Length: 166
Image 1: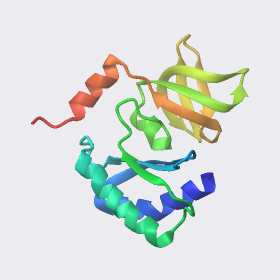
Image 2 (image 1 turned 180 degrees about the vertical axis):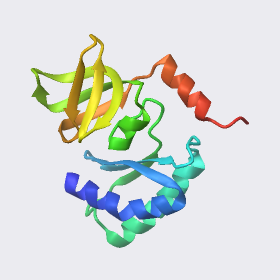
Image 3 (image 1 turned 90 degrees about the horizontal axis):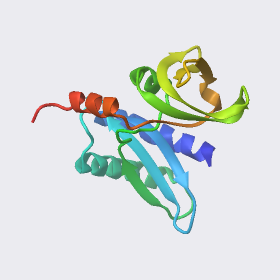
C-alpha cells in the first residue's frame, strides 16, 4: 500500500500547497472499513482548525474521486500532526532540533532498534540524535520505521510561543 500512499500524496500535495498547507503524511490502514489518513499543517505555523481540516477534506475528496487511486470503499480522515507529532521529512528533524524524540528503525543499528534522545538535526541523509546516555548517533532516514516527538514541558512551551496572541 506504500506505493498507493505515495501516489495519493503526489495527487493531493500540489492542491494543499496552493491552499497554504504542507502535507505531513498519508497513511492507509486496513480493516472492516479502511481509512485514508491525511495529516497536514498550516504553512503559517498557526494551529489547524476544524475548518482547515474540512477544507483539506473537500479538496482531497474531489481529487481522489477523479483519480480513483483506491478501488475499495474507505473513510477519509484529515488531521493535524498534533504537538507530539510524527517526524517524517528531513525538514522535521531540522525544525524540531533541540526537542526530545523516540525513533524506531526497521533494522537493528548497533544491536538496537529503539532510540530516545534529543534531536540534533539532519545531515547527509541521516538523523542526528543525542541519546540520554550522552552518545551521539546517526540514523539513516530511509531506515526509520517511525519517529515522533515526545511531549515535554519544553515542547509545550515552544508550541505556545508559536501561537499568535488572541
